[in-house]
Length: 304
Image (cartoon, rainbow, N blue to C red; front, side, top):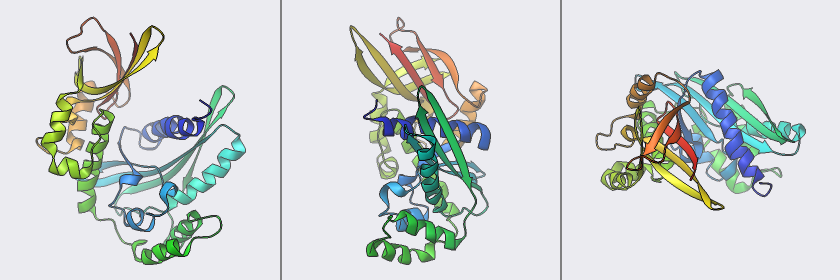
């Protein structure tokens, strides 16, 4: 735990807190999310920040209406097990990171930094919101992120080259296509089928063949395809299943995930997380409790 505490705090506890914050208090509903590392539609993230590596923000939460972005939340997550003072310093760094992405015209855009700190046996989380920056502020944030000793000549050259990208509008047409494919790639990865936008567009049949080999969990609301991780626990094993509703993994129609998500959410009549009974297909002697969410994902942990 201590050896991996940074990863656990920022990439698990912190993201869990950020998800709850965004979906319950900021947007008030589940939304789609993409990893900022995979984003190419943002001209600054795709160009000026290519050498900043870990200094990019972590995630974009977003929602769409009529094929256009209606809400965007830029999120950076920090974590430590030291002190609140360390968390505050991390939050300051995170503010620089969320200032960099381009504004999305016509969409409500918010920039949030979450800091999680494990203090004794309690998890404390702090969050701050940064206002929308102007061009000068965004350039200053890029330069500060480039290094405590000052940006290298190579990174300064990148920033100078990208100066023209600090103001332009994001292309809604390009964005609408890319975010759907990024969302599809995230769902496939959660089910245990790592993929890329290129793979989804060019090799859907190969991906569908891989999906057909996944374990199936049946629930009253439908079937899930999932990846199973088995962890030895003495004479027994802990089975961790992460999966996605079958309808979200069907690439044959290239249908956008947004309307599918709306139908799925209506069927479960919920906006958040719901435990339902489930069973592995063909193994009725292994009853499970499956936690589902409105984005079509499921999680189940069992000791067998």
